[in-house]
Image (tube, rainbow, N blue to C red):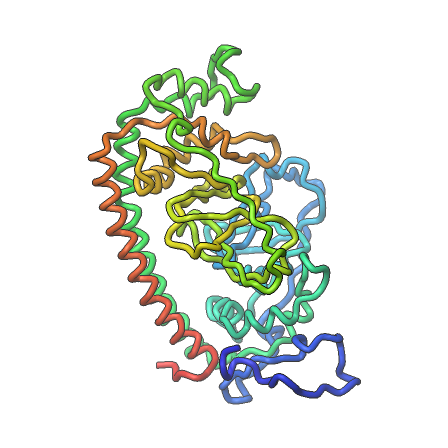
Length: 439
């Protein structure tokens, strides 16, 4: 436990009349180092909203929330995923604060961004309007996602072992520092400077990928992927839908492109973490910005299903979010690194350099091909067997090596920017905690 983060020591007392729950962690508090006058319940900075979506509205036309990532990025479901959606929905407008009851303790909270404008959410996502005279929206998001507050939320969650929740009343009663708006905005500005530097590094990483994308598109005939009307033979179809027809026509239009399966294979090695109950396992995830990233450490006793082992230069992807680029190459990871059993793990066997494939799967060219190789109706997925059917152009090894070098230089710049960002983030969190003056 970080020194100075939690006010309550290992042993402390609580009056029986105040015992709202039989749980030690529930009564711990963040030890904010701000003047007492600035510490106020979070509920004083927000107002809960309950604007219900018309139950008769066609679900397929609604911008229904997909999820909020641990970094605070919100995604909207695809139209085909909304068909048949049941349950009440509520509106969240741009600028509103929304959190996931189940995942807020891991950072699943966001301010609805302006481009989204309006979002339909289930009752699992409480919606708040921020009182602008009290709190800056971005500052509030920083406080709630700060490391000390995350540790606090971990203790507040309750419910079943796999679906613990933090209800709105518990969320709202937590005290946070609410200094003058000018001070809040200085803290936000310090964080924005960090984020911009990191974004610049990611922009550099996109450059070799964009160049490769342009080259691949010059090599391929792509019009089959965008036709509204297609004619295909029965024997060329994998299934009776437009996606399969477009995929078939793309293969026929590009006969020299071998399937990825000639160079890669599935790499599923199951691990049973509960067999070592006290061991902390490093769990990795994947997203469409950073690729494969460390997620968290989890004790073996807290797993209830086998996970998949991952190794350096292997790949894995999220089968439900591959269409938005949630694929990545595994970097240097511990020997016991694992990922969710839901993710699809695969590896290169011959003919392609892993670093080149890391660039290839990041191109919009490859994502366009993923779109027509997914399977399923309501929630479409890309399994390894579907991925391996994707036809790809053959690139000379010398060209692959050039792309690998360009990508490696960009990856190093991102790593350097991340290191600087981590140090700067620690300073920002110290400002939030009150242990560092706000310059």
